Every structure is written in C-alpha cells, then in structure tokens.
Image 1 (cartoon, rainbow, N blue to C red):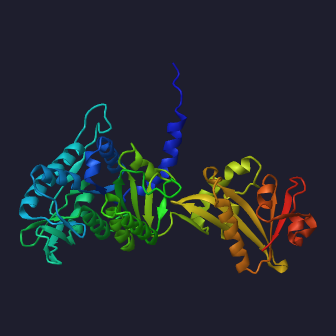
Image 2 (image 1 turned 120 degrees about the vertical axis):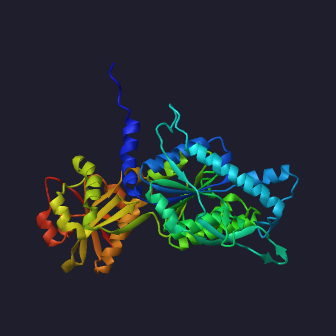
Image 3 (image 1 turned 45 degrees about the horizontal axis):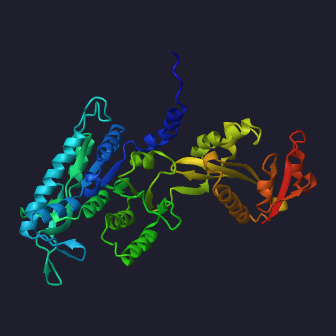
Length: 442
C-alpha cells in the first residue's frame, strides 16, 4: 500500500519553520487566568506550552485565580470586597486565597508532568520550578480603606528566574508574593506578569481570553494595536462598565510592558484549540498583539534580504512575469530595492533605477507574496518607491510589464512608446519580450 503525502502537513511545517528558528532561545511570559485553567481546553493548552518548551523557548508561567477565589469565598460565606478594582483581602479571605492558589499551583504542575502514551504530552520531560521570585509589599490604606493582605510588586528576582530558565526549567509563579518581613500578600497576576516580562526583558507577553483577541466594529479580529490604540480600547471598556474584565487587566499589563521595552504582547482565545500555536507560528496569527512597532515594515533592502527576495521572485521569473536576476546581480543592485518585511519574512519587493539626467526612473521587479496580493501591499510598495523617487528629484516613473498592465493603469500609469523612455533605457529595450511601457508623473 502506497501512503499518500499529506500536503497540508508538509506546507504547514515549511511555513512555520522560520518562526521556529526565530523563537528558539526567546523568553516568553505567559499569563494563565483562572478562566483558562477552568476551561475544557486547558489540557490542550498545557500540551502546546510543552511543545513551545521543546522548541527551545524559555517559558515563565504566571497564573491567576480570580474565579476560583470568588467561588471559594462565596462557599465560605465571605463577601468579596473591592476598592478601585482591587480586592480588599482581610485575614479570613487571605487564608482561603492561599489555599486556592496553592491548590492551583499543584494542579498546573501536575498537568505539566503528564506523559501518557497516545497524548500530546507523551515523552515530555518538563522540569517545573516555583519559588519566592516575587517580593511584594502591602498596598496599605487608600481613601480610608485598608487593603490588608493585598499587595503590589516590589521586586522581581530576575536573576533567579534566569538561572532556572538556563537549566531548561519552566518557571511557574503564583499570585502570592512574599515580603522581606516574612509576610505574604495577594498580588494581581497581570501586574506580576508585566513586571516579570519587563525585568527579564522578555520577547513576548502572552495572555488568554474567551474571544479570539480584540474584535473590531466589523466583527473581525484586530490583529495589531499600538499602546495608544490599546488605551482607547480601555476607555471604551470603561464606558461599557467592563473595565475590570480579564481583557481589561491584560491591556493594562500589555501597555505597561510595551512601553517598558517588551516588543510584543499577544492576546489569544483559550477556547479555540491550537490558538496559541497559530498565533506564534503563522504569518498573520489569529489573535491581537500590542506592539511598539508594526510587525510589518516597508524599508530599504540590505544584503541580508537577498535570500528572501530570491524566494519571492523566483516563481514569477519561472512564469516569465519577471526578468530573471542572478544572486550576483541582486547583490550588486541591492541598494535599488525596497521590501515589505513581516516577522522577518520578505513578502513584497520592488526596485528603483534612476535616470537622473532626464528626471526619470524605472520601477522594476515588483512582487508581492501570493498570500498578500488581495490586500494593499502592492499599493504600499508603489508608494514606497514613489517616495524614494521624489527624494531623488525624479518627476516621472515608468514600468515595463507583460502581465500587469491593468494593475498599473489603475494606479495612474499610462501607456507610452519606447521613444518616451530615457535614451539609455531605449538602447536596452528587449523587442523580443515586447513589454508594455507605462508612465506616471509623480
């Protein structure tokens, strides 16, 4: 019996490999809220976390317990009290909080220790370490309200955490911090996660929510937000009376982390199986990320981009859409190229060849990755080339094309004759290829 090749699996591996290489050796801080732990999908999330660790990613897990604490306090007949969205933790409440957090810490550790045959955790050998990595201090009294055993982060033992990560351990941190006087305090898990990410100079802060990230007005997931946009979203949550939700707490942590230097913070669904892996190992992800700068940049190309440009243009050259360029030619002409880069991958390119004596320039080798041709990347590439041309006092931009005539015409280019080209370009025109010539005044 001949086994059929699984093309989907092969393609998925090939597309995820750049991200595997990029993430290896990185440090991720993952917030696991109590809602996530209680969900039926939590075992699969644990398996995905184990997979991340097996790929050489250093992991710090910070767990929360708000719904479990609320339920246990209610069962004990203790009313939960909050002031300015912070729990007021008296002695009776704190006794139960410590029990709940201790129980969840053991439960998460046991889940990470599974190794059953025929499960995703088969063969996993994870070393999970917990400790007094968070030094806390009391919040004190505010507006006459004594927060008692509610605290805030005073210090993070980043060196202690790094030592454990270097030993290939997963560090598990609870929302209970310890003080230098021997006391312990209940601390907001999102605050701990943010401070751990900041002090470790983590590459990512990741959290879970019930929806697939932030849903925009169109009903689609908002893939990317800058801190200022995230603050606007927080204001909207406050207006809706939802400013104490897990998503709101995540945004407070993500904004603080982003502004303190953490490059990206991700929000994905704990209900969707595999959402964490899709977010981290696909080009567009499935959730929302808060970033200091966009994951996608249009910029001038460098010698390090040649491999990516070749991967992009080779299929088009084989179809006869683009004129073939050798690696050596690209190396000599790389200063003429601009690219669109997304997560380290070249998804668009174009080149500008000026003829300054006639204030004209050729735009050539315009290529967009097939998965992004339905978006506005082509327009961004043209705009970038036009911007470079204007800086060089170019007044007219022309292209030679055999297949994309209408695409360029829709962007303001008009058909012209060979005699309208710069004299030097006229001498190089390939009459056998019979490319159409289009010109645009910029």
